[in-house]
Amino acid sequence: MAEKEEADRAVSAFIWNIVEIHSQLEEIHKSWAQLLGITEPQWLILMAIDELDEGRGVSGVAVANKLRIHPGFVTNQTKKLETLEFLTRSPSPDDARYVQMSLTEKAGAEIAKLSIKKQGLNATLFDGLDRASIEYLNQRLSLLAKNSRLASQKLSIGVL
Figure 1 (tube, rainbow, N blue to C red):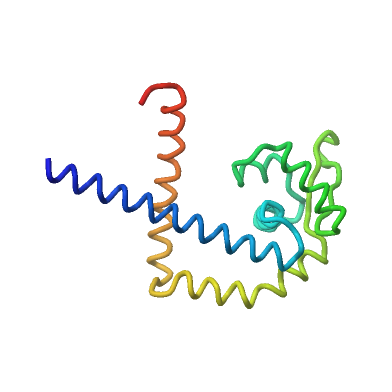
Figure 2: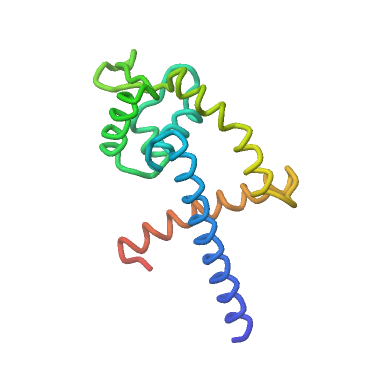
C-alpha cells in the first residue's frame, strides 16, 4: 500500500506543478499581450498563426485546434485583430468559403521587438536544461497530453 500512496503523491505533485506552470505561463502571455495592446487570447491566436503559417496562411480551424478553443471564438477575435492591423484574412484559394489568415508586417515587427525579451524569458524558464533534456521532456509531455485527452474522453463518456 505504501508504494501506491507514494505513486499517488508523485502524481499529485506532478499535477500541481503543471497547474503552477500553466498559471505562470498565463501571466507571461498576459504581459506579452499587454505590450501589444491586445488580450491574452488574441496574443495566443497570433502566436498560433505565426507557428502554423508556412506561407499560405492558416485556417481558423487550424488555429482553433492548436489552441483547443472553439472556431467561432477564433473568427470573432481574428476580426478584431484584423481591425488592429495585426493580421490579414483572405478567402482560401482552395475553397472560398474558408478564410486563410496571415500576420501583417506590423505584427511581425511587433513580435520581433519582443524577441530579445522572449530569449531572456526562455533562458530563465529553461535554466539548467540542455537541448537534449528539453527534447526528452517534450516527448514525455506529448505522451501525457495524448493520454490526458484520452482520459478526458473516457471520463466524459463514463468509462472511468
